[in-house]
Length: 452
Ligand SMILES: Cc1cc2nc3c(=O)[nH]c(=O)nc-3n(C[C@H](O)[C@H](O)[C@H](O)COP(=O)(O)OP(=O)(O)OC[C@H]3O[C@@H](n4cnc5c(N)ncnc54)[C@H](O)[C@@H]3O)c2cc1C
Image 1 (tube, protein in one colour):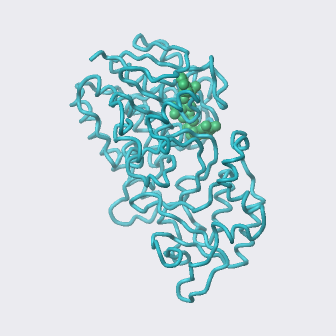
Image 2 (cartoon, protein in one colour):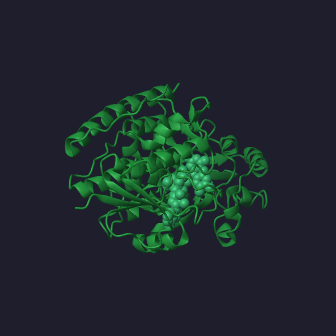
Image 3 (cartoon, helix red, strand yellow):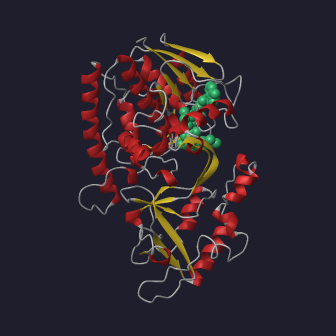
């Protein structure tokens, strides 16, 4: 087979994918529509533009985001090496000078003989092995085509995500398990007294919001899926007669009805994560933690992800994709990468760029697809995409809750993270060895900076 792959979209994932392919000697045609056509969030013509925060998240070796970064470094990630080179001080996080970072990525890719970069909007799916990495703001023409490939119901256009908490961090001496009217025992319920509900309501309506413009442009969706703070601001009892209604949820022991109840629904098959039902929100992240910890039982909750509401095109991965990031039905040489696969975040998108590139490389070389171990950070993200509940699927970022639980209970979070990091590192060693055996080439590692 011709050793050539087309990559559509020169964002974080597409740039990473192009690099990973090129360093395996594969020719790449990279199509990027900017500057001819842009998105509501991008403002430059550089590849790998960082659209919002300049932070790539925690970089400590024992934090889930740090584990992911180290795996990317060990894969000689272009995005990570340019980020390390354009680092600005940000405590334990990896933050970058966004202009220097994107310029470096652009120059490195432009300098590679295997990569041709064409500035054009892709409006039909290219023939031959292709990676689509057009991100959460994929142009309308291409998103319609993807919708046809995925099936209408499997391509989402908005994120309306409720916060997700780690199950172990819920205080079950306060919360209790029960389904409304005694059905569906898998819900966890956090009961309010009147006094605590009123304090919570006051904090909620006064909390600082971060409502993006594109959200305000979508009035029909706005009515159909109200942020919890907007619903609350319609009156002190609106939530009590809506998602926080206590009926059918008597308190264990007394059988009395609470003043209001927040229900938490299981979010992953392992039962390590729970989302707050009806709590899609656009409150600022710090405000979410402050206000939602006022919910009885969640005082010490560990948030695996916080709520967001913004335009975000992504596929319902567990329903629409196979384990190689291809549509279940359709072309076997068409891979997705980046945020569109159903992950969320700069590093997570980059990781899915690596995965798609290694899969496309395996396809063109006729070798087996890489098997990412479940215990690694990248393997855990892939596991989430494959295994999450399709009915309530929402994009996920890297967090401890999606990684395998350590055997035995380790209560201390730092120790738990260290344990998971050590296991992930062992599994990643084995992965790299297997990759070398199957492809006959050794990935070059780049220097990891001191991440303390
Ligand atoms: C407004 C907004 C803010 C965000 N803020 C953060 C944040 O602070 N932190 C964080 O971790 N994550 C954030 N994200 C989520 C996500 O991490 C980023 O969007 C990330 O850039 C996704 O990487 P990607 O490579 O999948 O997509 P992108 O980086 O968006 O790259 C996609 C590329 O494809 C191009 N493209 C689109 N359609 C076509 C087409 N038809 N033909 C050719 N090219 C095309 C685009 O121009 C773009 O360059 C944010 C997302 C949005 C929408």
